[in-house]
Image (cartoon, rainbow, N blue to C red; front, top):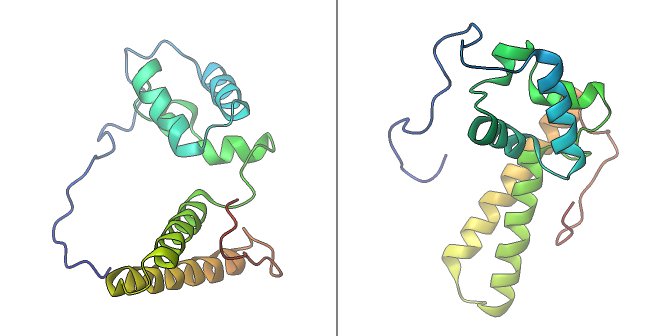
Length: 144
């Protein structure tokens, strides 16, 4: 948002919406893999990467007709704090530790302010959507 970057480079989802012919897993087997990987303590994005790299599943949604987070919610394994919000909170705590040591680092101070505002906006959105409870707050420096 604030970094003056241009372009949309990055990884793209497969164009084809049907199940690929090389996938040997059924939708039930993929759901069991997702549950097993989630119980091992992996985040939803890490589960998707593991399925892509180790098991050759390019898109869980095309094979299982559900997203990873929906499968986790059905089995009550979803994280209490959404992953993007959690990573922003981690980033904020890292910047806060840096600012305690380097008090005159104004660039980091600006990054801290931007990260804090992103956290507030995301919290407001998740509370409005009902993903977080209305009384949920986070403590600065605490990682979830």
